[in-house]
Image 1 (cartoon, rainbow, N blue to C red):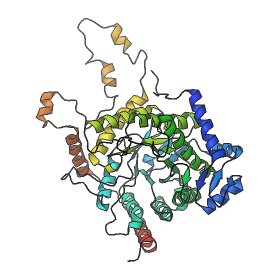
Image 2 (image 1 turned 180 degrees about the vertical axis):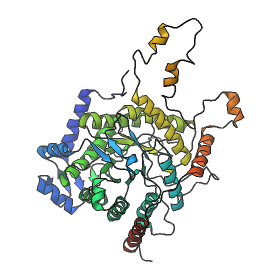
Image 3 (image 1 turned 120 degrees about the horizontal axis):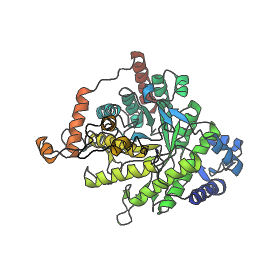
Image 4 (image 1 turned 90 degrees about the horizontal axis):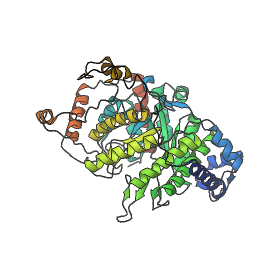
Length: 485
C-alpha cells in the first residue's frame, strides 16, 4: 500500500484543460481591482491596466514569470517554534485550521444559549484551540463588539487571541486600514518587523468578490502583507449556481482562477511571497436559494481545486476540510464533517480548514472542535497509508503458527498496537461499559473532554512589555478608526 494515499478526481488531460482555461481568463478576459498603488506596480511590470475601469490583463510572459516566483516550500511560523507549519507537510499529510466567520457561539457546555461570541469567549475558544494536538492553527472568530468600536473588532479579537496561544494564525481584516494594525500587533509578539518577516507568526486572508473582482480592502491586504513579508492565503468564496457555474468543474474553474490571480499579483508586488491557495466553495440550493457548503457536488468541486493546485501548479492549497449545513451536532453533521475531511485530504489539500463549525460556517462550537480534532487524527492515519511487507504482516509468527495459538502475547502485537490514532471522544466500549459510563453520546463525551481541558489548562503569559505594546496599539486603533460618538 502507498505510504501517502491520494485520490485523483481529475485526469491529467483535465488538469491541463483547467490550467489552459484559467490562463485564458487572466490573460485575455482579465479581472478588476481597486487599488491605485497596485495598479501602478502591475502596469510597470507589463500588465495591461485600465485606470478608469480597473481592468487588468496579465500578458502570457508576465503570467508565466509570476507563476515561477510562487514559493513551493516555506514555513508558517508558530509563536512557539514547536508549532511551526512546514509546507509541504514533511510526512505528506496536512495541517488544520479553525473556522473563521462563525458569528454565533452555541455554548452547549453551559446552558445551550445561542448568541454572538463575546471577547471573553474568544479567549476561551483560543485556549481550547491551543490545547488540541490535531488543530494546527487558528483564525479569528467574528466577535460581538461589546465595549469597543465595531470598526476595530478584528484588532480587539487578535489582541485576545495573541495572549492565549502559541500557534500560527490567519487574520481577516474587516476594514482596509486595519491590516496595518494587525501586522503591527503580530510584530510586537514576534519581536519586531524584521523578526516577523523572518518568522511570520500570522498569515492573512484576502478575498475575491466573484466573479474576478477585487475590492480595495482585499487589494490593500495583499499590498501591505507583501511589503511586510506576511504570507497570504488568497481566498475565493463562490456560490455555485449563484455567481459561478453550478457544476463541480465550473465552480472549481472560477474559484481557482480568482485565487490564482491574487497569487500572481502578490508575486509581481513582492516575488517569493508565500501563498496558500484557498478556494472555499459553497452552493446555492435551487429549491430554497439558501447557501450551502456540504453537498456532494461542492465536495467534488473542492477535490478538483485541491488537485489542480497541488498537482497542476505545485502550490500549497487549503479548503474547507470539515463543515456541515446542519444547525446542530447531529447525525447529518457527523456524516458531512467526516465525508468532507476524508475526500479533500485524499485529493491533496495542504490545509483542512473550518474546524469547529456547524450551520454552514455561521456558528462555531467547542464540542464540535473537539470532535473534529479526533476526526483529523483518524484522517491523518488514513492519509499516511500503511506498509505491506513481511514485518508488517508478521510473517514470522504466521508461518510458525501452532494450533489454537493467538497473537495477544506476540512481540509484534506489542510493537504495533499503539500505531493507530486513539480517539478521545469516539466510544469503543461494550454496551455494558457504555451504560456504566452514563450512556453518553459523542456530544456529551466531547462536553466532558471540554471541561477536562478547561480544568487543566496552563495559561500563556506574554512578557509585560509585549502586552503593554499590544494595549497601546489597540488604544490607538480605537482612537483612529473608531467612530466618534
